[in-house]
Length: 369
Image (cartoon, rainbow, N blue to C red; front, side):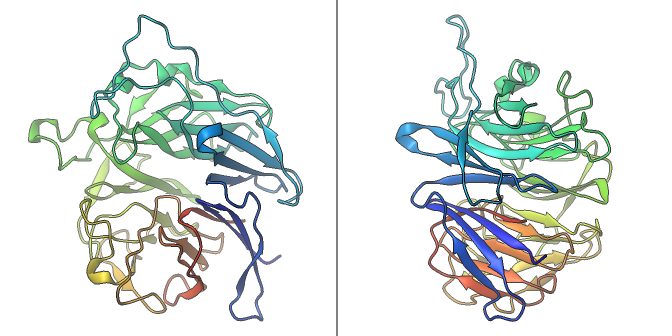
């Protein structure tokens, strides 16, 4: 069966079909939720079930499920925060504002091999569902953890759980990435949590606080399906890699043309191969020299190739969000979308790219299904 792409954007979900004999090979076939911001998508493995998270602004955050591969959709329950006790003070350290105990955005969705669903949200909530999304339960051990008081909003108003990694060998082993709040893991399904940021550094903090777990502005974390302990992290001030499930990280400084960015992807069978889409820096979230490129390593970060064939090489101001790059199960097909509505795909591991679209709404998430 040929692959398909789900592209979540600020103005709808775009479903693309692949045709091997056609040019361009990818064509938009359907546009569910046109006009509505779609913040996250998830497909259950070996199933026809899809989930999308919507942010309606005035009407709030919604979740929808399809059981026929996206032909039809029905609204399901969205996670709910508990009532905030009157005597609890919950203040964001960056803004000084009171953190709302209410759902502001769904940033991540994941499915465990057991069928349990997990959902990471802003402001910093983690939820699970044992009934396919019919109901959700907040993981209070994380919400009530003293360390959460040190999380803070970075580019968004509030801290957000954007990375959710479930160990394929053990569904009780879950790792999360938080902006801004570091990396946390549980080995018992969410009863206890431990920080996993040793080796990371936050260059924007005073030196004596640069190693603090909650100070780490983790942009995105992925692991290799065939080697689940190998993690790649795009951090606010660089790229980090772990070989032991995040217990120890090593900073990689050789990414070209820049170590700054938001997204990363790892080859499904080769943990030494990973891709990044660099930007200049925090204050200038643009491709270096206005040239959109993909950086690829094939040797675990010892060296990088700068891939640019088929990508715009002048006056390109595209930024790639953390969920907007994906690689398929073969490790050969890649796709990414940008804040300026561009969408590109490769069939040879990133050596050459084909432009799929140039006028989409800002792209939040790209997923092969």
